[in-house]
Image 1 (cartoon, protein in one colour):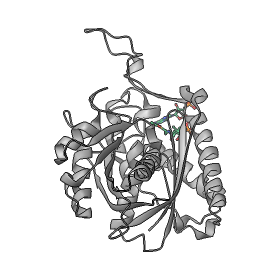
Image 2 (cartoon, helix red, strand yellow):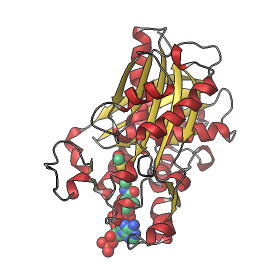
Image 3 (cartoon, rainbow, N blue to C red):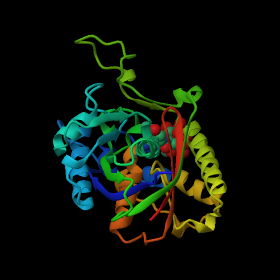
Image 4 (spheres, protein in one colour):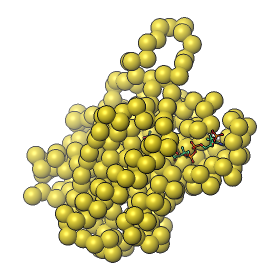
Length: 327
Ligand code: ACO
């Protein structure tokens, strides 16, 4: 079977940073409530005119440079995003043009916060079909554009950012190898998290923007669903690869809420020093959260050659998944 190798990780976030105190001037909340309920202290916010494609392009350029790969040598540009600049063209087409790729296959994946895991699975399938493929995979989000700044239950949770990777079947020079990946969904639970603004929003020019444009979430139910499904998919992944939790050097779960990450870690029986978190500084950046975390973990020297990383995510759909990556 053709293997999937990751040759670089890079991240990019917008310059503007909002602290919890900044948000107390927008909604009735407090730094104490946000930190204790979510673990978040800061989040980055894209400026007007700064779109998912712009964040993704910056991360992509860094990833190409780190992998020492020319954009001209890419065969595919794949973008995971739930917050595309427009319904079409895809963010992938814009990123491909911005980085200087040729007439490559370019498309977006819509799997919300599970976009990174779904993307790995898609990249693996492309590599199996064509082992010479050289893929730029980008996860980029501007969720602050879709939060309702009058809804304190959701607007404090999200941040903007992008992570990017260069992927191929070539082992030489690689940072990591994908050992296994699983992706699942349950559309019956689709109402738990909706990011609005699609064509189901009846809208004609001049209408006031209403609730249907924004993120709507049943936080309590999402929390339970997330903990249950991320834990079970991690257990299944470990079991089918004959691993114990003790084999995992680092758990890098979707950075949605510190209590969710800790609950999954506890249920898996992994000690907290083997759980990576950086959501205090980023908030929930949806599909970008795991690549941002992996990029930061590498840059901070938290990963050594040979380390096994267990990643898991959940999101709107509902979607969820997990992957084992050997560094
Ligand atoms: N500041 C102050 N008070 C608040 C805030 C806030 N920002 N938000 C809610 N509250 C209040 C509520 O109004 C409620 O008050 P009440 O008891 O007077 O009615 C109280 O705090 C408790 O509210 P809960 O919703 O029960 O709070 P909970 O402890 O469940 O935490 C949270 C809410 C953080 C959203 C949690 O449920 C959670 O993390 N859920 C998972 C969400 C998630 O991770 N989503 C990611 C997926 S998103 C995607 O895929 C795009």
